[in-house]
Length: 230
Image (cartoon, rainbow, N blue to C red; front, side, top):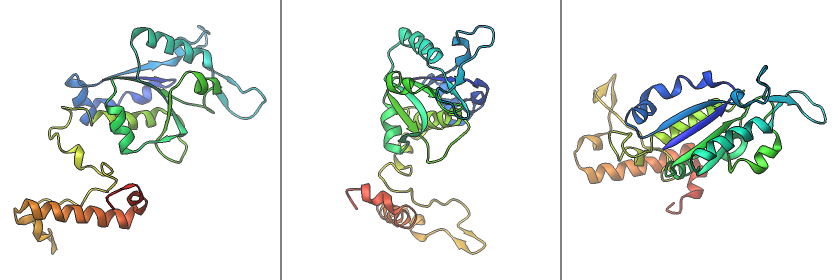
């Protein structure tokens, strides 16, 4: 998979992809992440301007359509993209099913908003999807793009050492993951549930499913409304 990220602040994305699962994915040739500086596509070669005042007035600057169109034309001339995603606080809320779906694609573009956002014509004509990582506003879309890239990249076959690990993550079946324990069995009188020590995988699986349902009911009951088995 290849992910191209368009940003006015490429330095913000220098660290997140050089560690942990994403580094493993890149080292294994499973994921290619390319960060593009939008200013290189400015028509203003001297000042490299990519933003301007909004028509009609108001505070804040707006990212201009022309540099964005120019870089997208270059990228699309090189390969076909499954989605061109604009990271936006009012986009489709990122969840596990969406991450699963995007992990099955081959090429993605992520456009990071900044300032007061992008010229509306970018959203109307140049992007194919808008994604939000939550109901809050960040200074720019760079961190959101890193989150989305991580959520997708860890799902690629061969990234996780245990291929079944991702299947037991929270939200994969609209349930939160069950509690997990490791050594020692007894710490300050706090005990590991005895069923986990039995070696009976049938009982353990049943216990974990019960715990997932209970935890979801207590912490995220709205998820159960989307679970046909509940």
